[in-house]
Image (cartoon, rainbow, N blue to C red):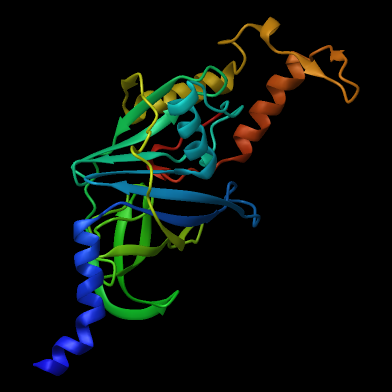
Length: 271
């Protein structure tokens, strides 16, 4: 009995620590292919901030913007098109409510899609060590993709990056079967903010609404703003004449090139 207690004592201490103070920041690196026909990958840093019974998964840039908005009333600007830097998920009440945020380019409108798709995990017997954690493999389908996850019960939190949750330990790494998307834990920190400072959404929308938003923006990306508000400067600080036709075509080109969204089953098709 003494040997049993001694061997597992560090794990018991860590388990109690996580139960009593579930306020952590788990930092993940996302490597993904924006274009399924191209071998080029892009990498971004995301934070999974957990406080009490809620969590938010967002990029480093959005996390900084949320903090600035909460403290100073204004955050950073949005992008010129929809992209995967905008992966932003808020989980409430121990994952009972999950929202994927949608940020409309240019006009700074924020909506939220309730994520109601159940995650039916299949835990396998396969195990390996990742970043000094003893991990076990689990499989799941989400968003029209098959995913392989590696979780560790050394960190007994049923959490993970993006919408993923529900395993008997933190997800250390998760990739879809084509490795178009690969999330991997790279660092753990104490979460010391008083609040999560999540952005506020204006209303809930459906996946079909999201597809319509993307298609409408692709068709007329500049229609929702005043062209007089767009001012460009040259390297000497002089105002340049804006070529709106060229700007529109560049946005549409970049949109077509980003043809590999994480939810393939809700992919917007552009003509």
